[in-house]
Structures are given as C-alpha cells and as structure tokens.
Amino acid sequence: MNFFAKSLAVVSALFLLAACDSTPSSSSGGKSGQGGTANGGPVRPGSAEDLTQNVGDRVFFELDSSTLNAESQHTLDRQAAWLKQYPNVNVTVEGHCDERGTREYNLALGERRAAATKKYLAGIGIAANRISTISYGKERPAVIGSDESAWGQNRRSVTVLTNQ
Image (cartoon, rainbow, N blue to C red; front, side, top):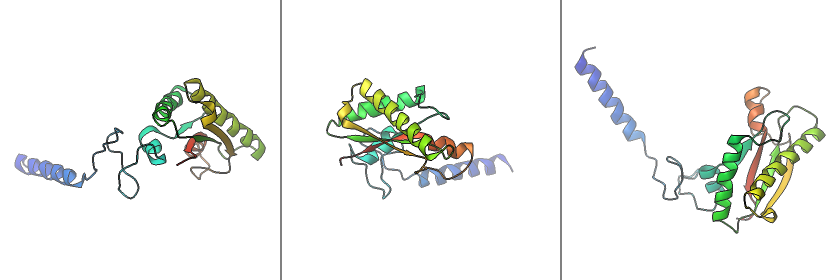
C-alpha cells in the first residue's frame, strides 16, 4: 500500500471514530464520558445514579477480610464528599461475600465489611445516624461464577441510597 492510500485509510478511520462519539457532555461535574442514565438522559445530582456513575458506590475486599485498602479508602473519601454535598441523603451499606464459606460465616463477614465501611465514613465526618448496615453474605452475588474474577467482584460493600 502506498503512502497516499495509507494516509487516506487513517483519515477515514478518524472520521468514522469521530462520527461514532455522540456522548453528551455532562454539566454535573462528573468524570468525562459519564453523566447519562441508561435511557440516555442526564443524571440528576444527588441521585443514586449520580453516586454510582460519578463517585462509585462500592468497595472491594480481599478474601476473608473486612480491611479497607487504599483504593477502597479513596472511593469512600469521594462518597463522603458527595454525602456532605447532599446532607439530606441517608444510605445503607450492604456487606457481601463470595460463594465460598458457610451461609452463617458469610453473613458475619458481610456485616464486618459493612461495619468497616460505615466506621470509615463516620470517621471522616458523615453522621453515623445517616448510615445503616445490612449483610447479605453470599446471597446476592454481583457476578455469577466460581473463579477469582467473580469472587473478587462479589467481596464488596455497596452504598445504597435509602431516601430518594
């Protein structure tokens, strides 16, 4: 292929990519490329979608642990800033586990994960009475599967708005 043909192919590919980008810009201050709902409309500030898409609603844990790592703490710092921005919003922190272990063990571990998340948020200025906790143990997996990829996504706590 000569130089002219290669150049034409590159320019054509760029035009096609530019034509495919129809993501509306977000005025909510969220991350670039985010800010829309599943139906394509704008995300309402202070909504569950705003928390999920622009802040992050979940943190992940290592196997058999309720210790928050640095990445989880960073996500919770963003959640706390968001919660301070919306002081009338209350949340429930759900604790979840992967499929391994007994039901009873995982319910207790899920409770420790939810409690650790609540304690962290309360420790950085969110009123504890705005945060409730619940453990689902292994009963509500985010991902179905019996491998490390699925297990890693199921070892989590999820912050859910309780008053919309």
